[in-house]
Image (tube, rainbow, N blue to C red):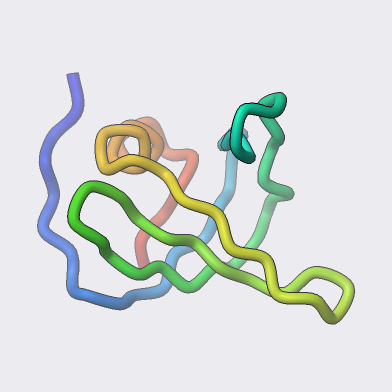
Length: 78
């Protein structure tokens, strides 16, 4: 069971364990780690962004997914 956390509208986090996301209907992809990310809150999700090889990367995790990874130590909120 995950705990519902309160987060500001925008904050920093660090991915320190395996966190996967799905692009559209494609396969699951693992976010590289360790990785510092910017996080923005949306109505039912969190938007994680970072730069990879000079290119911006943005992915979305549902709130329950994000909180699961925080509760299990895969994402550390700064």
